Amino acid sequence: MTDSVKPEKPYVTLGGEGTATIEEKRSEFIGYAAHVQDETEAQSFVRRIKAKHHDARHNVYAYVLGDTVQRYSDDGEPQGTAGIPVLDVLRKSGVTDACIVVTRYFGGILLGAGGLVRAYTAAAKAALDAAGTLTMERYAELRLRLSYADYQKLSAKLASLGATVDAVDFGGEVTLDVALKATAKDRFADAVRELFAGRVPVEARGERYDAR
Image (cartoon, rainbow, N blue to C red; front, side):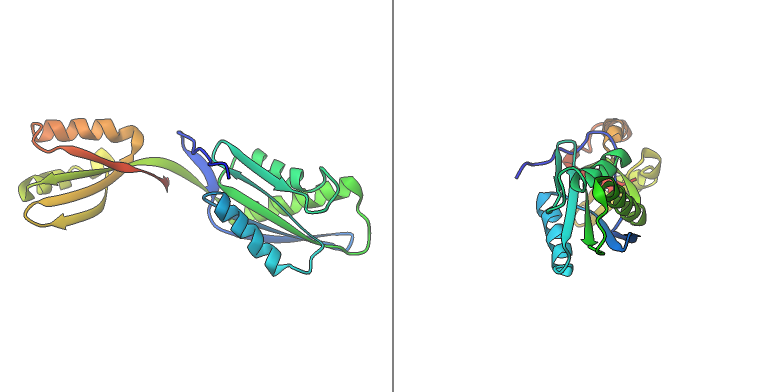
């Protein structure tokens, strides 16, 4: 499977799972939306919904991951009437790392291509709205090793430098793990260097995405 590439800038994803149901000429369309990290999670979510609605005629899905991956399935519906409309809902919403599955129970009345597009679009939008959104931002993870006196001095300044504490280990010296927006990493390192005349190194531990 293709690996997704996370955006460098802040991005919007789903805040949780959302479910919504609409009816169109006695056909029932049940939309499910969820945040997913990768294709494995996306396909697992699709399988879970398909298993839940194994008796349904169609379980249509679409998902987007990072800036690079977009997938959809019509699951037996006429081409262009189901998967693409669901994918378009994701595209137009601006979210990423998100998956939508829309289950259809046929009500005995043919909807036609236009009716299917409208119904799948409406169910996908409703599920997306029910899930809510979060803005995710890239954070740098840093580690400092310092004396107890220096730790007390730095602790008073962490908030003003935009840093939050991930972990603290009090041993022979203090090991302090902090996180802050990646764009503020250099400013933080410069401030620490100035505060302690260069005697406290700032180690990069990695990066992660957190809700802003």
